[in-house]
Length: 176
Image (cartoon, rainbow, N blue to C red; front, side, top):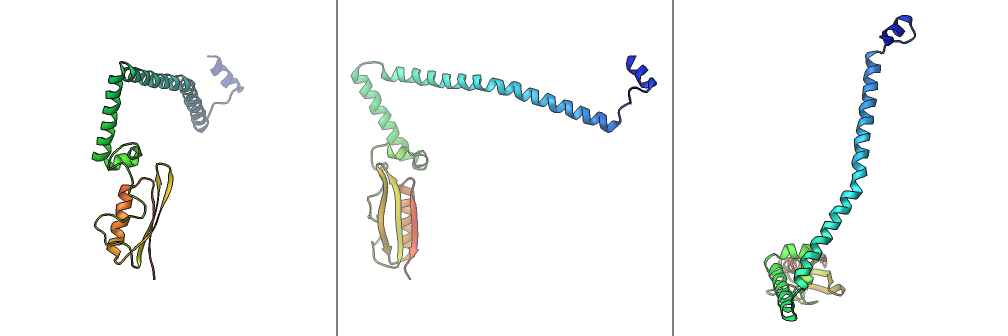
């Protein structure tokens, strides 16, 4: 009632459709910002809770692992090592991607010896060359350049090192 009286007296001008729409957009923006702020206020508490639950789960699992006598602990450690070796042997791509292949024992765990071509290749001597640098257990390892008589043998060697080393850098070249 008061508003209509002010409009008739000419003290208040009625809003146009565009002005009204602009005001509604401003209200909606303020509402969104208020919701985002209320969510942002809850994030630190939620992150802390999640981290705390992770530590709780880790503590619970280690409690079961570390409890018992020395024989039981040795058996559990051996079972864990056996599982890790099985994982590396059966899922080599996953083990290489997660760098678990450096932790396991056995034939699938260690990279090929430096300078040794893969099984089945005829060995060095030719114009098709490959150089390999990979990250070993104690840091980077440079394999001396190996040259082969055919491109197929060179590619076979490059594939071998690509599949048997993690974090590798392979340079394939041709002597002209």
